[in-house]
Image (cartoon, rainbow, N blue to C red; front, top):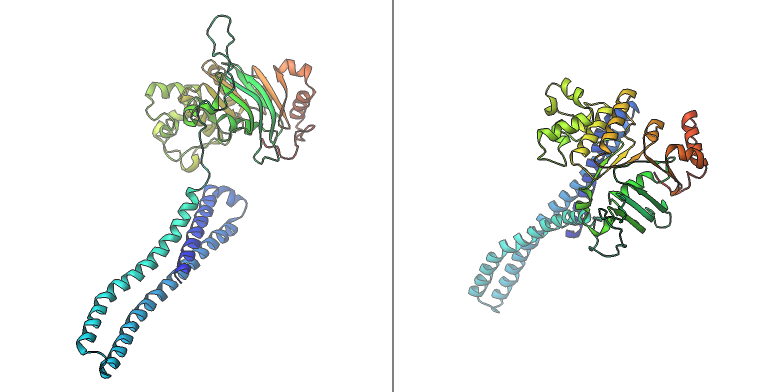
Length: 423
């Protein structure tokens, strides 16, 4: 019965967690839920989780309600049995009344501690169920830093000396990676991003562009090969130290709950007014902040719902630039921008390239043309690198991508859609 309480407690904790996750999912995408007319389905889903949590709680309460009377019955019953047997022995003159009275007095002193002990066991079983759920969460995989110097390839000089080649800001050397070992996403990717260079990473959907970004940010480590930053393997230093040198702007540009100032200073909480003014101007947020009622202290709303998609994109860019990264990763930064804002952002990107290296996942022709270097991915491999003009002359695959965009043909060219790739 006590084990049943533990099982019921664990199932209740799991059901409560599932219900909370479903509720957060529905509230976080409430407009999509309404537009898809899925209110009733989400309600049923959340209600199902609530019912599971309710059933588990009731079951646990029932078992607990049975345990307490059972313990009382066992303790009081044993007292009655002792009294009965002792009385019989006294009547048969096998013992004295004094011995019986002393024994009963000892039992009276022991009844309450024994009762409390069994009640504590019931409470402990409820706690054990909750503890097991906490342990399940704590045992989830966590990021582990490699031992400094372990497995690092010989790196080239960081530059500065006469006659010594200057290391690229970022270099991939024969990098292989798969979310499942049997299905590699990147297959021997090799390319360099020179310092203060605007590099565009292009290719059809599913060829591994976003995976390249994930590896650069060390959300994952490559299965084979090496990724070098300033000539050194990124795995020989801590993840936090490495990420301090890299800025990331995701395509969906998440905006956190709070004010615009809190969002901009998220990675640099002690940033001064001059630095804020610099990134606001660089990301062309001046007009937005000027028309808001409280300027930078205006609430952005839940998930930035008070802002347009383009405004969220520019806020994310400003947030990344505030940390002055050595390498800035932009995942399709013009996806939510109109033509005027896109032109302004391209100017900002040119200015930003003077401070750091830009690596941009690009689909729009205007973004691709603006790059100094273009890296073309196909089926997890680099199939061509060069400038726009050079690739038009030398790469048939690049020309097919350009034709597909110009004609609006969204079909995946050639082998870009091989199973197992993800972009």
